[in-house]
Length: 139
Image 1 (cartoon, rainbow, N blue to C red):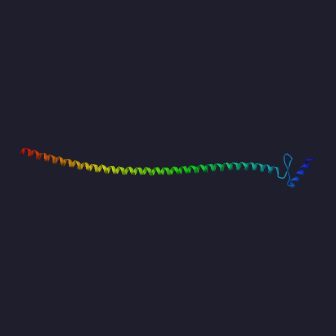
Image 2 (tube, helix red, strand yellow; image 1 turned 45 degrees about the vertical axis):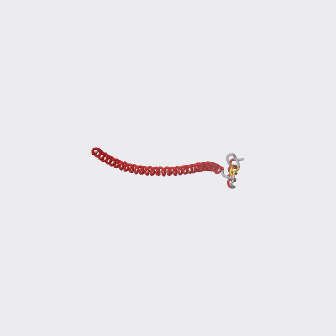
Image 3 (tube, rainbow, N blue to C red; image 1 turned 180 degrees about the horizontal axis):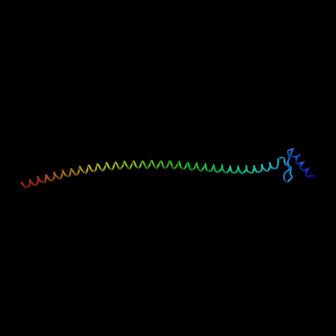
């Protein structure tokens, strides 16, 4: 077969929408378009794989973020509880301190009353002793 005949046969096939590839197989699709389609399919598969990996990573991140948020919320509530307990203990300490100070003041007052009473009793005792001494001198 002549080279011109081959080109003419190919041209007739192309007009009919048929193509011959590099290894002389008959194709419905232009071989260059078929190659581009294969490349595009490979790129699409890679893109889908990358997208799937990204989705998995995002899902993992969301789960971890949710777990972390839950743990933070628990710790926040625990911290609030400790703060309330600490405030309660401070108030109790202040109240106990006020009660102790009031008790100290009462004891001081009682001590002062007893001191005055002792003084008065000592004066009375001294006065009685003087009277007894005078009475003994008279008799």
